[in-house]
Image 1 (cartoon, rainbow, N blue to C red):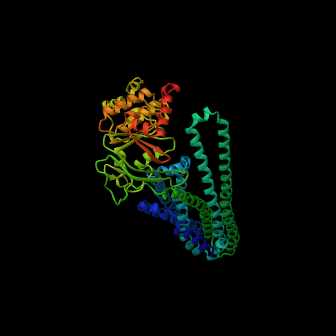
Image 2 (image 1 turned 120 degrees about the vertical axis):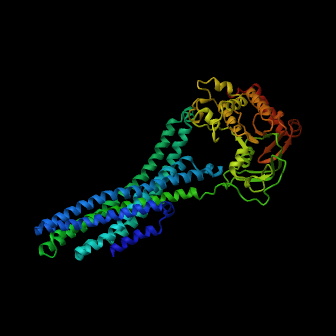
Image 3 (image 1 turned 180 degrees about the vertical axis):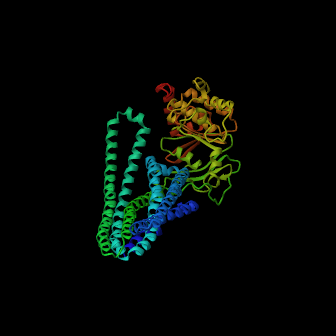
Length: 598
């Protein structure tokens, strides 16, 4: 009864096993590994019988019987060595392939999530799921699955052999095992909940560490080191506390199971020894049976390990599923009106957008905005008026409703994202550069390396050529993390070069000259207008000095379009624009120092 209850709990795992779809891709490898595992267990079961034969041959004084038994033992051990290597390679090795698949799937899924998701979830939490949780799943589908299979196969093969040797001793062996299913279920449930709590604390610790290291300059400039250490210690202590609770249950699990099996061994020694004395069984039979008891102790102890790893793996997979179940930005969505606004580079008939998590009490509501090919548009407004949100919706970094934005006469939601983002480029105020060569940062995403002449042309258009040529290695200079060896203005101009490399039809500039001197900014704008006459520009800037050069200006306030027209028209008709112009004009021409001169 105990045995079947224990096997029922194992089969229950397989019935509810969440990793079948992960394992299905590797059926061939798993099949070879499973065959090798069966052969290993067959040799494990056969070895005690060979030992019994050898001892009985010695007792009977049979040299031939002893030699046959000895060679049998040698052959079984050699076969066991080969098959043990095979199951480790094919079963445990497969778990590494599955971990690789999960990492790739998660990374690809993260690439297709909207900005809204990243505004809700900490980077450190995602890093924890991509490393710690996937490793827990790997342990579950590798060693954890292996131990469970090994236990089932060993029991299935060993019980007939034990019954063959002595039904009485077999009954004694399993009389204590009904305790095992109840024990593993109770402790396993507790391990499951504790592991999930520990992983949440780990995610919090990882997130805080990632944030503080990314902002280490700010931490130092604000003399925040001591407070940062205190917070780190607090989060670390919370994780340690949950980890100790988990370790307490894990450490209690295996020794308790071992104690149960040891009691079974004690009963076999008493009962089996009496049978040998009475002549009911031979010494060889007793020794062979004792070896079976020792062997059966391993799966009974290992079941605790298997339960722990599988529970942790299940909890980790639930955390991954939270990411996988987050809706992605569909590559292309159906639209009832896929084509409209012909002749316009960009047409926004009516656009309404509210952040889905409602963390921002803000709604963007604009209508009938048109940009013709080659036109230069300015976008101005107070902070928080929706300028960056509008750009994100055009690029589908945030997902707009269908029939709200048309690019070249096609609804943007029905366009493949790679096509849309090749033709529409953007440069933001906050620049991210990779720790690669300067030229590689410019050509990022291009299939082929850029010729030197093309790199120089891009750098010239962004007023960066002379500064790059003054570097020791020129465009081959290796940038530090996030471009730490460049000034803020140089980073912004390099990012502009990166946006121009694809020769986009529409370029969105989101206050990307905030760290550039006013005169340098004017040179860049003039260069863009002359070097890229077909380029359609939409410039969002808190600097007003470039607005008179643009064809039309849109004024946003609290997500509403409150004015549009030329610079002169808005100065005359809009009090908000008039105020912004004179405030920024005073700042730009002498009342504050520019960013690059500080």
